[in-house]
Image (cartoon, rainbow, N blue to C red; front, side):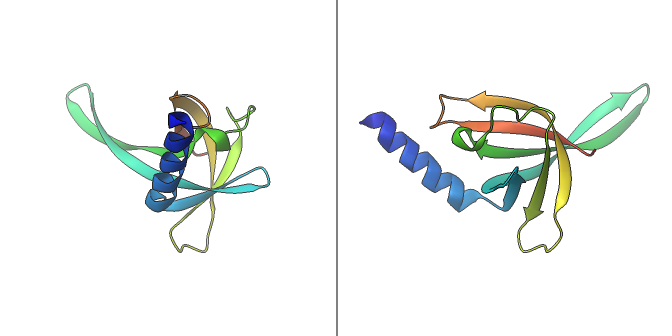
Length: 106
């Protein structure tokens, strides 16, 4: 009973927080997209970079997801951007958990 309630609540919260949609194969799913800033030191210089990532419900992650190409549309933008799935880090049991997906430009 609790697992079912948890799954429904996670799904509702994820849909409310989603700021983008991802096209994965033939499916369009809500995602939370972010290009987190990360600072690093290279020799004496400090440099910054972004680490594009998205959060997606475990139930929406296909088995052959690693290395696949996906299209992401953020907000009301008309243009989709293509990304490659660099890594995924599931959190929790499928289907109730959420997966963090690290992205890179092809």
